[in-house]
Length: 260
Image (cartoon, rainbow, N blue to C red; front, top):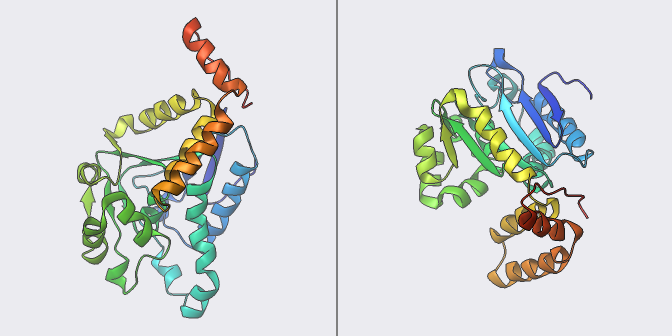
């Protein structure tokens, strides 16, 4: 397992733990962390045994967003050359076969917030505070936030958060649909792991297709989505894992899946 400067990557069985590891800088993002994130994603996607990724952070806060010192160094020409690559970093969490769970505590702002919206499931501690303040600095969200946030919370709430730069707490984030689960701080990682293990205990192909189909439903027509359901049902019906799931249910035992 390679070592990284800005992240810790630990793999335990089918779960990969990605830990933001820049607590002295409030886990801020920037060119260095983004370049390294791509390498972390490469490592995860090269390991077919990884089925769930848990993204978490060291220190008191998840991420305070982009490092403003880095922002001083860029201009429109740099953005034009690099923005598509930056957007793909978040899209990659959304598109990878593994299910990506974010475990968020403390502050989650800006670039960290936009990464959060690209994860599959979000678990927050009750001390979490979330904001997307790019407009305050004369910018607009540019790593998918303006597109993914409305799909999570609706256009009105997205406009409130993006245009007024309002900070919300974990409970309000759950109420509007930004996060799915809120727990006390000391239970955060335990709850994320419990969720991960429940996912792992299900047949791998069914989980993978479920993620892809739900993602597609946000962009496709009902007809297109139903066609995708037909294709995945044809594939999954009669697989060894599907038959094993049914046998294990009737035999009252834990199933053993082979991804076949």
